Length: 124
Image (cartoon, rainbow, N blue to C red; front, top):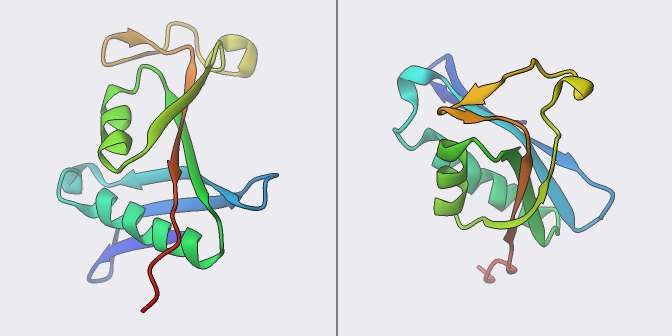
């Protein structure tokens, strides 16, 4: 878990989890308090996550979100992530999600995965 603080106030977090592939780490969740979004905190958390993942020898960082999450897709692609695949019907009532879930005016149904291929860090 990585955290961002402004003095003693928590303003963001990012959670990394292992996957069944030893060289792949998943960015499981990330959030920045609404008043601080768009100020570079999310970008700084992802940068710190990349350094952490590299230090553990992973070669790939993956993240998923809803296909309707236009803002999230824009954010991750700006950080260098690329779309890898879509999993249909993840965010549906059969999986515990409310019916008629909408984000940015788009029905939330499918999950999209993105990946960032990590090259080894240059030696110091």
